[in-house]
Amino acid sequence: MKFKNRKEEAMAKFAVAQQKAAQDAQWKRQVEVMKEMKTPILHADHKLPTSRRDLLSAGLMSGLAYAAVPGLLSTITTKAYGIDPAKCKADAAEGADAAAAAGYLHVELSGGAGLSGNMVFGKQAAGAALELYAPEGYGTNGFGSMIRPGDVTLDTTFGAPFHPESRIMQGMKSVMSPEAQAKTQAAGIAGTSGDDTRNNPLNPVQLVTKMRTPGALTSIAGVQDGNTGGRTRELDIGADPSIPKALVSNEQSLANLVDPGLVATRLSEQAAVKIAETAGKLSESKLAAFNKKDLNEQVQELIACGYLGAKDLLTEYTEDALRPSNDAMLTGTPFGNLTFQQAVADQNNERSIVMSKLLTDGLASGATVVMGGYDYHGRGRQAQNDRDFAVGVVIGLALESAHRKSVPMMVAVTSDGSVAALDGAGHEAYRSDSGARGSALMFGIGAAAAPEMVQNQIGKYSDAGAVDTSYLVTGNSPNLMALALAYNFAAFSGNMANFDKALSDAGAQMPFNQQEYLAFAPKA
Image 1 (tube, rainbow, N blue to C red):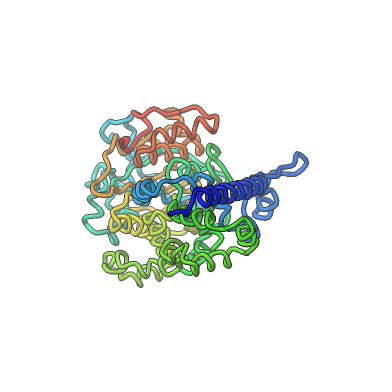
Image 2: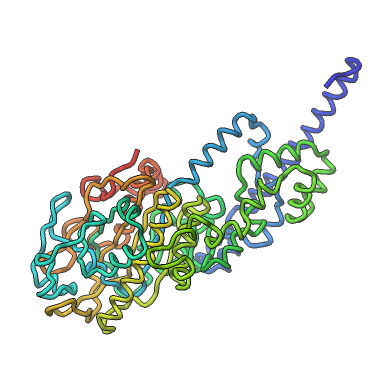
């Protein structure tokens, strides 16, 4: 800008300096308010907060009012004022990479599923070839004398050995393309857990989200109101009730994610810069007046004035944009013999696809799906087969969705307990609870190719058909089995350093070594 004389130039510079000083003072006041609002209030004479109401009272969970009180500008750090326009392009590129970060989907089977009656475990030590345990032991896992693993050809489509009668494997294949199957590897962890109880700390999703880039809209998407979005208790290491969570039960509930208050707290760097520039153009009095308005009014004014385009905030995260039914990559091709509409007619299938879209689009870091009715014993083989096939479809839909998006994803499957069968001739029904035959399954799909593997089995079974609890620390500790899931996700996603840091931050020691506890080879 040209000035008529030096006096006019000096006055203009003085005015700019005064305006900046006023803005800095206003920002400093807002920062103090933000710190106060975010500080948890925990009292020695009160129980630890567990319910949503307790968390809200303690300041560990944000309510609707909190989203409106600080206002839109309070979501921007002071660093936004000094960002160079050239750096914004670099930040945008980093954001694009972050959107392709590996997703983590945790599938909880409530009741005690027979996972070891699907993947065939052996008694070999780490890295060795499959060594079958005693035939009668396989009988207790449902494989009668006519279909023993040693007498039938095992299926290694996904790397790990699955019995041809495995309905989980069959369900996966029914909805996955050959290309997606070729990019998928599976592995199992032999480990016991308590039967039919939510007290098993089997879900590490909170720790997982600490290891990777936060989702654009939420860190954890779940189907139940709780710290993990699931039924079973969270892993102790890395537990943090303040991690952003969202309840997502179907397509319609995606509207919960695009509440203006939630969107405002997840602004992109570019949007933050634009709003900061807007604040820089306002006088102190106008800035104060703007801060007094509620969030909706602020957004409307910014868009109306041209400071913030709809592309930067609202249209990027509309409910319609989040719906899988509007995503041609998911709807354009059938899932096996199922059209998209046929697939999502089942609630669990719909949840799998909804969660997968959130993960592969970078809108969530981790997600949990809970499937009920997996208390197998006494229900008969047909009902057990139907349940196994159903979870196989849920796993397959998630992996196929990730394949279509060319985004890596790990799906972990756990159950609270397990079951045992009476030895017979065929595919025998489970008769009783038996957490000693427990296990967890992992499925990883790469963006362009199958992930490299160290091995397909962690831990081992004994000749009795039960977990050998004397071998690895994961054998008799649900907590450490869940930690091993997170450890393998760190390797699969290239976040080993972040895993070490998360352990250190939690005051925990590394209990694992790569040779015995990693299935997925560490990714650089």
